[in-house]
Length: 285
Image 1 (cartoon, rainbow, N blue to C red):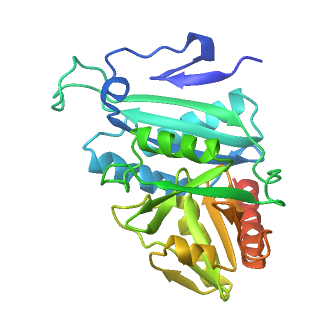
Image 2 (spheres, rainbow, N blue to C red):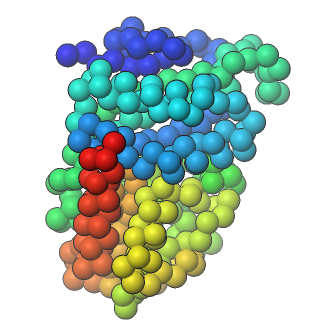
């Protein structure tokens, strides 16, 4: 079955999907995106993703391409048309099509595209062994809190990490970890989860938001502060979170084992609790 994608009001086979060469997302990276998990054929974390998308659009003065409810319906329709049971829906909104000019066009409608991808989220083969992380310089712009399609800094950082044997990179600025290339970064020390506080320096991760809520509910202490590379290397545990990894243990950083060299008990508990939460959300849809 050919994958069906969505392009500006139409559901079409992926090999027939076209966007204009004048789309400002293509020319300037002038747009935002979201990645939403799909569990048992249903979108999960829907409210938080819509809130973050709304904030990103407002920060860039881009209008919603349709109502939030219609946006959700497009995504769920894609899930159904592609018979997706587990994976993600990627969606992107750009400022639209206009002749190349740095200033915002005054009469351009936003562009909206979306597609699905099959992924093993609940039974990720990396959940048991964990992953290796490589630290890499943070080369990004200063508004990292906006989920912008400007991802060249992350592309370079991910390639650097993978070329050195890592599955993920942890970006470093002034000696402190900002976040993962495509994830939020955490360490655990003496049972306390430590992760950088929200600011313009990091993306407000949806899994971060959910995991910190879960931690509070079950009595796991959380310390929102910056941590250094040295502190990370001495941590009892480390982990990442994202739409595609949920919560995933980090077992080494720059070739040095973290804790026991296996995903730790706090990491495993948070993953189990998050998994139970999204399974229930999918069942209640």
